[in-house]
Length: 177
Image (cartoon, rainbow, N blue to C red; front, side, top):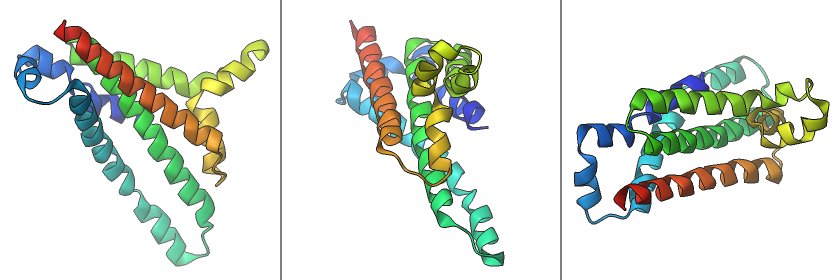
């Protein structure tokens, strides 16, 4: 569900600004491209985290009726938060690359879904299994969902998010030239 909802939230961030003509106004304000990208990212990320936070009701209600192992719950929410950050940054990057918000949605959805299912494809291509597992979102979420927080997984999501945000800033600067 996050692979569909996140591109829907991010598809308009920059693409709609360009299409409606407000991008020129935005670029004339005394803010840098980095500040614009970070502001758009934090706004969309905050909305997605609030949406994810609404599901805490399930964990709390289950814990009221029995003993709940909070390790996998906390690890799962941390992993999902990092996954959402990666999806938001990917969606923002796609939105900076096009003026059409539907194209931004479709590209972000396809790339996000492909990066998620890559680990499932590793069984079909054994020589590439290590590569597929290394870049797959699902492979990095798997251990966190069991409550094991590995720094490699955290660094993967943070690096992916940072790299996509950096490319978004470069894409914004390209439109100024």
